[in-house]
Image (cartoon, one colour):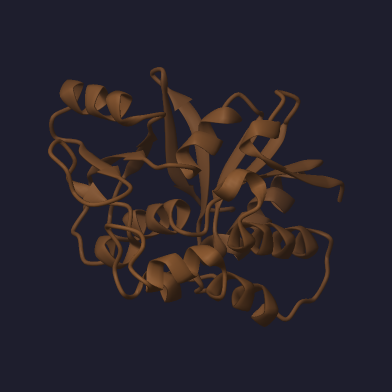
Amino acid sequence: MNSRAVGIPEVDGTEQVAVVVDVMRAFTTAAWAFHRGASKIVLAADTDEALAVKARHPRWLALKDGAAVSGFDLVNSPGLIQEADLSGRTVIQKTTAGTVGALAVVEAQLVLCASFVVAGATVRALADAGAHPVTFVITGEDGRAAEDLACAEYLDRLLAGDHLDPGPYLHRARTSPAADDLRDGRRRGAHPADVELCAQLDRFDFAMKVGIEEGLAVLRPFRTP
């Protein structure tokens, strides 16, 4: 299957099928939010948009990177989200890279958001849709994030039909600069379990698909038939 990997600055509008990868932590956190009962996630471009959406929908929960601040209810951390009761709730997610990458390709025919925890389901969704070629949007570090590249390469090889040992790919994520930052406390709003939660393979059986609903970019869990 033809594919390419690009950073957010390299998105050029030609993408028809896009897989937006953010392992640490946006799309691991999003998957956990769905597991904890969230019905949908609205992707916001920046803090102002997130707060504006929340102002229109006061019962929705706003989530961002970093430490908790006024106006936001949740932190972009799978370790913290796994303890939250989000049953039936809508979450507004704004992160430094993941949500920005998804919004950059939101007009594509098919947009999936991915991390290791939904890897297998993402591949099944792509295969079921007969989707090709695929553009992997590597959101971290302007397309250089080791954990995102490892996940994209793993997905790409699975799409090609290869039988893989996932160990080396997960090792690259666990030993990435982003993982080191989380372990060493250089990122605020982190939980001690974040790195290992981000390096779990196929923790969930759903993919995550982006669509436009009432003018908003909305992420929902998606299972193949």
